[in-house]
Image 1 (cartoon, rainbow, N blue to C red):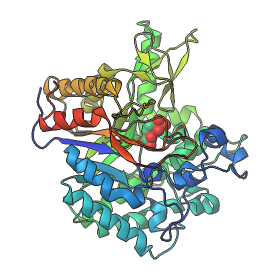
Image 2 (cartoon, rainbow, N blue to C red):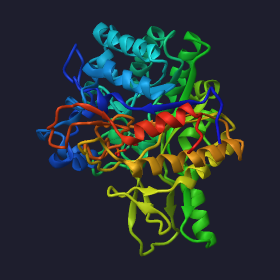
Image 3 (cartoon, protein in one colour):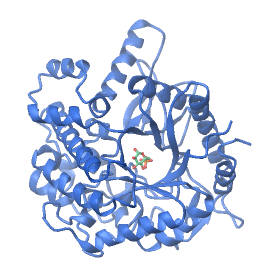
Image 4 (cartoon, rainbow, N blue to C red):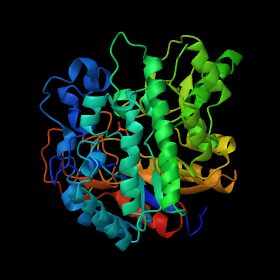
Length: 473
Ligand code: BG6
């Protein structure tokens, strides 16, 4: 199967997982710079920030990451040679506004992204830019409690206005927040929200999410005003929930889990909270600060496409069952006996991508954009390269299902971006050795390594695939 010439084959990364240079050229610290590696308590900080943040954990992978900040020319040249048509990264908010609440931006930060996007275009790649990929300026977390505060809408809006204006002739595809549904699963990673043990979790996360949704609508309005040709996307951690059995109660449980997972994208794509969400908020007895003007703004400024990450389907049951739990990309899922699983607990389900694409397209009837998909695993660097046939199998199976969704099911999809196209720091585990890349980076969990880049076998495979317009050989 072949896709059209305009299909955006590409790769994706995020500033905090690749740039490093955490203290350079006036950059302020972001919340990601406060999250240590696996050995030094990453999990505790991610899940219990209220208890663990004050401690000095000693090792912070984002501070150097893969040093993309200094090596982006070499990296983009390799990606250009690979034949990518699109390259996704994010702008580090605290490089532009080191504190987050200033009026004047940091020119050195703006210049860095000017150079980066110029280089992208020079290499023939369309930049796809996430405005906030988990990395809220740390000062905003400390002073305002991050998205717990309505003030964040204005700080975010100001930041967006500055970068959308600056890069209006260089970048066309934007996404407002990475995986906005992370807020209800890992609120600290999802938006710098720290919740005390005695606080009402749902009240806080749904309130914070509402502020993000309002900010997203405001940024979308600003973007379309600055350049009507901009394409603005929402972005969700997707992956359809399957019922554990065909028992109607399990089917209902899956239906409920899916409705809940779509709550924020419903707002961003349909311009209003679903009646499902309204019922849920009532059942949870939430008292949300949702102003009538927020709802007007949201209604008038829906997104143009649905960006999503897909790593696996998910599985749920109405009743406690005696099966293991797997990692549904930070969202809990039961272990599906029909799927294989990685060392890090992620299940592999290529058909689930086709199912998810159909679900999303039928629900919203707007273009999809797969902005993350990939396999995180250990690679061995041999004398003659990295022979990652397992990654080729993974990518080829997922791409094949995506092509079926497009060509057989009629789903409109703008592109496919392989996640972690160059090895980078894992967001969840902080490890380097959980590798997604098609390009190997000589760096390890303990920080050792020359940072040298080495194309893997999957690099040459993807190069061929793109040259053949997606035909899998
Ligand atoms: C997505 C994030 O959730 O999954 C990425 O947008 C992340 O930032 C990716 O890296 C893979 O997850 P992990 O935890 O293996 O890095």
